[in-house]
Picture (tube, rainbow, N blue to C red):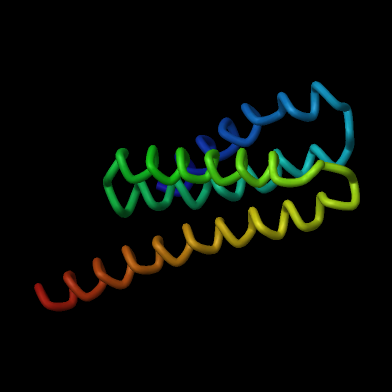
Length: 113
């Protein structure tokens, strides 16, 4: 349900405040915002896809990708827009996966009717 997804996404976003607390850089507050968005997407994938393993795999790959990205170039305020744009790209992949789930479930339910 939508309230459960929003609550879990809020908790997920808030749990990622640690980077801001270590730097007190206002740009790091964006982490909470985009993590909240990713939490919504992951919550929807779980709610409608029904697989906790999928969520674990996406979170692992997302963190792995971010770790590699973070270590590839020195993070300065100039690099933050690039970093966040790449994160948005990864999020779009999650959204596309979610749309595939919706379309396949819609087709399945349409065939059953």
